[in-house]
Image 1 (cartoon, one colour):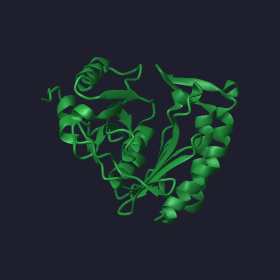
Image 2 (tube, helix red, strand yellow):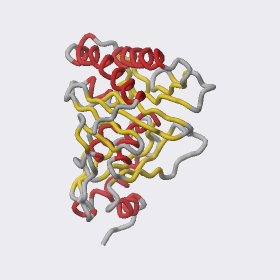
Image 3 (cartoon, one colour):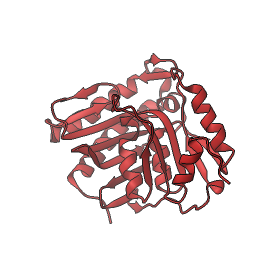
Image 4 (cartoon, helix red, strand yellow):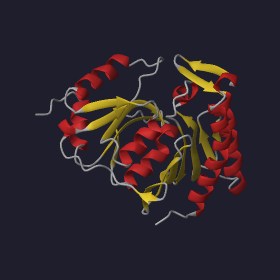
Length: 266
């Protein structure tokens, strides 16, 4: 089965169009203008150009929809019923260093629920997509989370902290406790792809603090439709665009949560 809804088709077309200049920029990194948003947090002319193309393409079909983006903020604030959640380059640091581990990520939200999403790595030509009730796919092939049953055998992925983080010690402490009780932990530098990789079984679970909504919006629906479990923990309701997330197959989810909470798994 191939997903073929109007929203998925629109997102896919927008990703493909934006990816053309992104691929070109990736081959000419020395020509990009780069500025710092904060310690260890950068934005490039490629981020801005990609975002501009995505917004233009999506607005052609639905100019009235709200848009939440990493670089431009919130557009059409009055429309909270229908919103596009966009990260033009998730994994900017990887992109700027010539590491092909980054992606365009777009989720479509309706009445505060993500209905469909696409994560596209243009360098590897891998497109992950999902729609509520219709399953998750990688390049038109159905994907499922892993069936790993024991946390001690699990291969996990995580990310952070950024240079500006005020909870670095807590994040490192969690990392140490988790890594002592699982097979191994990787850090790839793209939250969107981390979630997509859990969805297709490359990793068994993922957790990370201090994410933004645009980092994970598309990944939420893709992972859920692949049979995984997504959980938010210790989130501040006064900061709705900030997320702490835990995602995995259903077998290891509770044990992984216990490890994050500093419990030892026998």
